[in-house]
Length: 111
Length: 113
Image 1 (cartoon, chains in turn blue, yellow):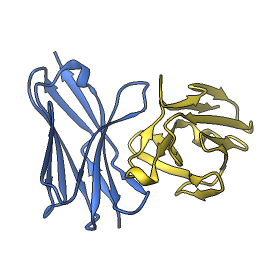
Image 2 (tube, chains in turn yellow, brown):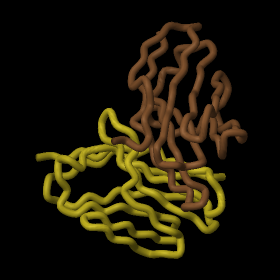
Image 3 (spheres, chains in turn cyan, orange):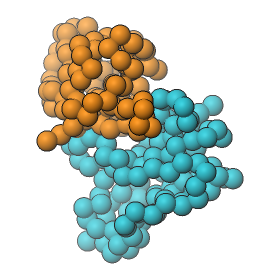
Image 4 (spheres, one colour):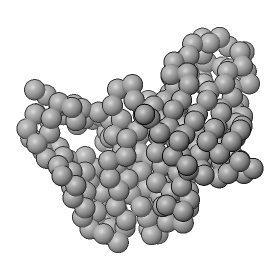
C-alpha cells in the first residue's frame, strides 16, 4: 500500500549540513514534496521534484531522488537556527489529488 | 497578506458542543481540503472539495461535516465534539490546472475537554 516514512528527529550544529531522509512506496509517476512547519504555523512548501528527475537545487536546499530505492532526501547547507522546524515529505501520484504525508522529521539546530 | 486564512486560530470547547472552523483563500484555486494533524501521525485528510458542488469524504470523515459556501470558502464542522478530536486542523488549496500543488493555511488548534 501507499506509505511515506521519515525518521522522527534530527539534531545538527549550526553551520553544518542537514540531511533529512524519506522513503516512499508509489512506483507510478510521482511528485515528491518537501514542506516546512515552524512552531504555530502551517506547512510551507519548500520544493518539489518529479519522479523523472534525480536532483533539484534551490539555494541552500538540494533534493536528491533515488528512484531504484524509492528514497528522497533534503539537504540543507549551512543550517541556521531558523531552519529548526518539522519537515514533511509527501508524495502524490501524477493525475491525482491525493497526497500521502510522512510523519514529519523534527530538525533541531544547536547553536 | 496570507493567501489561505483560517479562523479561529485556537479554540477550546467542551464535549458535545458544535464547532465550526472556517477557511478562506485568495489564491483563486478550485480545490480545497481539510486535514488534521496529530503528533506522530502526519496529516490525514478529512474532506476535500473539487468545486462548490463537488464534496468528498477523505480517510477520516466520521464525526465531521463540511460546507463549500463559495469557491473561496470551505468550512469544517464538528457536530458534537469529542476529546479525541483534539488536534491541529489545516485547510489547504490547490489548482487543478496548475499542477495541484497544495498550499496550506496556518492551522487551527482545537482542544475538546
